[in-house]
Amino acid sequence: MQQKNQSPLTYAQALQKAEAYCAYQERSQYEVRGKLLDLGLRGDDLERIISELISTNFLNEERFALAYAQGKMRMKSWGRRKIADGLRFKQVSAPLIKKALNSLNGDEYEEKLRQLIEKKGRSMNEKNTKLLNYKLGNYAISKGYEPDLVFYILKTKEL
Image (cartoon, rainbow, N blue to C red; front, side, top):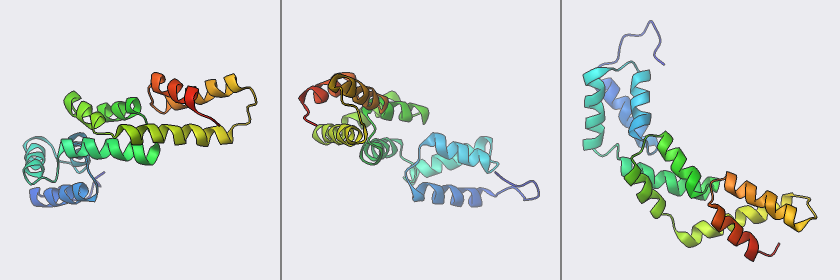
């Protein structure tokens, strides 16, 4: 947030800050717009900077959606449902959400789910197999995996 005693940023300074913000990691338009609002930009200047970032390819919503989906699956072991919710929160359009979810490798996705279930299963001290599977299923579903896939994996796994 901008301090009260600072003078407002010029267009060039704001553009430079926005470019650095986008260069650090992929960003959505929603995130960049929020950052520019925090820097004190409003109206036409804000929209001109967003347009400039898009035209110079610092800001690309499709690239952001694909990177977000891949990153959340690989690093946080999130399922498609939770990834879609995260993208909706970042105000990504429905067609781009669909494209990002379709870009996830099915085999890698299932392997991530298997690893998640096995890791969680090792940390649980439940002796009753049905209760253990119930708890593991709920855990995997809470991470955003589809219930059909979760119960299929639980049915075929051997802990």
